[in-house]
Length: 245
Image (cartoon, rainbow, N blue to C red; front, side, top):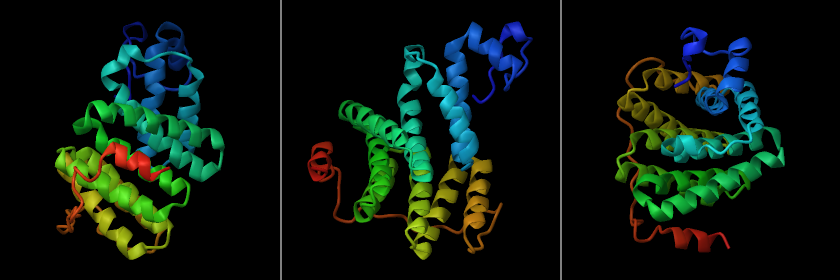
């Protein structure tokens, strides 16, 4: 959750300043979680400044997060997505290294639990390709991430993959194609129940383009991305690893 309530601050939501200092001293694990939560929210709102500020505060804590073991894969996933995005915006190599570390961690988890982690690994792979201007491989990885998210019934991962694919295509000049992905992302966020995010994605896309999209209403049914002749037996972790060599 974005806000943490601590008994010794009278259940007042923690914010920057005094309450943050109290949390840092009395419960540094919660403080670290507080900052990554803020970073994730800022990232989903495409707010680069607050994302960067919260991530730097997160990395200030030299603490293992085993206390949050049930959430570590999701946290690592977002650290990777955020890091690759920040790298493309700042060209600071440390962020690319952080993204790569998250990708490799997710690769290992995907080897143990493909159902939960394969689509996350492939989406991080797509973002890595984007950073390195391997655009055709990025396109394939974005579509694979969408496909496996759908097969594995993770509508939240599918929504994020569609959204990031849309931004990628827009940035490489394929505006018409990007609209299809953005509309599908809106639809998936809406089905997931993230109504606010569904509106934000249209608003943000319109802020960076001249495209007019229907803000705040249910979108038309978008096309579903087909796997075609590609299937799970063809898209294995070992095959992807070999392709990168």
